[in-house]
Length: 411
Image (tube, rainbow, N blue to C red):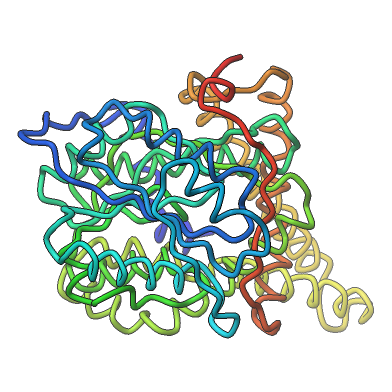
């Protein structure tokens, strides 16, 4: 408890910053920059057209925006549907190197070869199931105009009310936007990219001649690389909507990949982050706390106390007194109660402060989600253990909610 209190106290500060200052205010952009939207899609014929249309509907000069879709090993009509919607499409069929990062690598390389290194000011990355609010690009353009080489945005959910799983995801990402990245931006430190809805400058892309981040979590790998090398990631309160898993089985598969990817990044970049911390870079410490396997420490504490309690009870006072056994039992209870209360409090605060961004017809779900959100977070404990030993590969998530922005935001 002492370790977690010290290590993660800065996030308590972020929490109060987010409550006190609300949404960060960005200066108006002095000019409109040119953008390429890049979408990696695998069998996404159901949802890809809605995303492309939401990009086409942006309140931004259309001549400065192009949409590129990489149809990655598709066995459906994703490429055809994307073309009809108005996107430039690249088809990729490399089954040996599957996954979003390899699709991005091909997309970046092809765009640079066809358009030139300096044609676009920045690339914006989305997943095929996403939808953009109409002012998304106008808001993101402000961060680009401020000189940031990378930036993330406000990740909302388009299916909050589908299940207790999707609701938990939604609250986590709303909390990440308002009380982490938003607070980081206000405090002047670096943010972190998560999943989709992020911008990377063409300067970074052309320096790599593509995309060099190919772990199971290429987004957090890139964020960690930036933190370790002093590249500051910005945040724009530009809202987009993401489809969340509905079942525990689908969620387990996805979070298993995330957890395994975090391990890969932790063991690959841990030394670099330590060097960044030694140079006084707070962002390196922040990312270290983000990718460090904190759940392992909690689990070890539980195992030690449970083992001592079990063996001590069998010894009938020889190895442990009744007072010591009571202390162990109390430690176990406190561990789970404190974890539940912490996540419950985060869910309540996020729901209250971000209520206007939550679109859900079942109002009761907002209340019950606060109660079930801690349980969802506790399921990370077995995932953390299994991911240590299990070989995990990229598995596509099936998307089915073919909605428009208006349909999502209407109550």
